[in-house]
Amino acid sequence: MDELSVEIAGLRSAVVTRDRDVLDVVRDRYKGFLSPGTPDWRIEIDLRQAAGHRSDGDVLVSRDGERARFVIKRWDFVGTADLAERRASATFAGANEYSIDSFLRILYSLALVEAHGLVVHAASLIRNGRAHLFSGPSGAGKTTLARLSPDATLLSDELSIVRLADGRARCHGTPFWGELARAGQDRAAPLRGICFLHHGSRHAVEAITPRRALERLLPNVLFFARDPELTGRVLEIAADLVESVPCFDLSFRLDPGFWEVIDRA
Amino acid sequence: MPEQYLARNSRTAWRVYDGEAVILLAEDSTLNTLNAVGTLIWEGADGKTPVSSLVGRICTEFDVEPVQAERDVTAFVDKLSQRGLLNVSASPHEPR
Image (cartoon, rainbow over all chains, first blue to last red; front, side, top):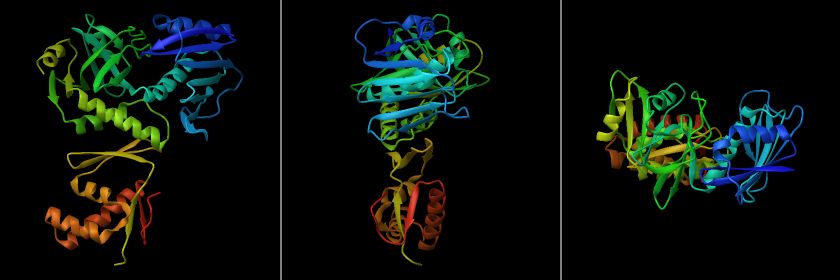
């Protein structure tokens, strides 16, 4: 068995596999996030024909009898995640980088709940030492906004990770990219605020209440487990997050002037 | 009208902000938000409190006539039951 360690948002995972192609995919896809050292998680990956179990494109994450063990299924893979043992396994039909990346995204969305963190559909950037989170569904402008910010440090244009500790939120770079097709940097910074994106004819920010922010944030949290306990914890983390930083609706047009209204907010 | 008892679906997670509830259903992560009256009913949906008691509280706290309050509660309960958030019973019981 060969092994590579990937560290995302402070959670280091050892990817263990017999397959050289899988190792090559992991080494290439996560090259900015490779991090030797004692892993927090162990992920065993193998390949088998017709690994997936669902005919549609949906992800199914369900509890597997044991309190902390979940089964993860999609058309192109089937796997397990044991949150107590911090062990996961996955079988893929082939060494496809998109399949492996999708599994990792789902796994981290589960693992981070234990670490009081969330994976959010959001672009994130560091500017003047503080991270800004720009959340919204596909088409809201996450990648556009990242492209309009060449002087900022890119954490992600698609899926960002926020972790809370002692009531303070930090935003972490991820290798989970969107249309930009470029990984964020393996950096982290205190979160200055959350902006919920929509395109407009001018740049404008409007402060919103934590309740309104929670309503806006929750549909953008990457989370698949149909489980009351974990759902409750996601709600708690999301609520803590919107109470820890200022939240805004951000209307922006296609130029970098939006940073000025954010700086004034 | 026969007495009814409401119980929150235990497969929900919820939090109240400024008297208004935000509810997540675990089955599909659907988000529901309630106004102040809806939140009063939701918080009272413990499986043991009769609906008539909730109607009485709404009349008192929101200055609504009993007929109107009863009508509003019925519509609200129907809606949340259809969404799988509330269970309605003819006798008191522990929430499932």
